[in-house]
Amino acid sequence: MATVGWAVLPMSLSGAEGLDLKKECKASYLDGAFHQAGVGRGESLQVREDIRRDEVMWIQPCKASAHQMRYLANLETLRLALNERFFLGLFDFEGHFAIYQQGAYYKAHLDRHTGTSDRIVTIILYLNEGWQTGDGGELKLWTSAAGPNGCYELIEPRMGTMVCFMAEDFWHEVLPATKQRTSITGWFRQRS
Ligand code: OGA
Ligand code: MN
Image: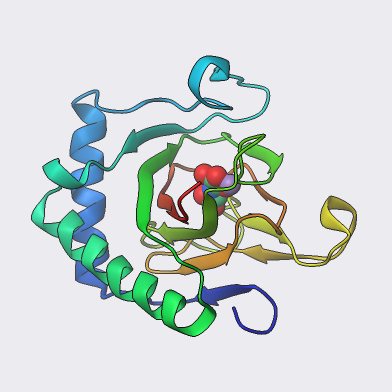
């Protein structure tokens, strides 16, 4: 994060913790707690299947399960560390579980809504046990200032892998996968 503004941490949590989160996520999905993700926010929020096809469930800290609380507590440690090291003034986290069914994608984008600046750091945790090269579903992260014309990294969404990047700076895309793909995606925010 300090030198290039993004980082990948394989095995950021224990396999058991990841599986617990995944199990809950699946149960909530079967309960119908997810909805089709939209693009934009407020009045301009709309479902655009040409842009993204994931289904999401926002994490509500007041209703979070014990496993979710544990993950939120880990994120809290990370938030404080980022503030201490980079003076970012991050004050909270907003995030959702996301499920991409086979073939679903999220086309190239930046994680900021037009006219807003509150999302500072993007944090993604992948929850896909047994993911193999060839299953697709990589996060394509353009790592140069040239954005979607420049060079990029392909990050496989393996169980426990965490990706962080400065939300304003990095174009990224979710490539379609040959099977269902699960993650928790969220943002540390500044007061806008
Ligand atoms: C997002 C996003 C990336 C991923 O939800 O904004 O870009 O790898 N997710 O799931
Ligand atoms: Mn994104």
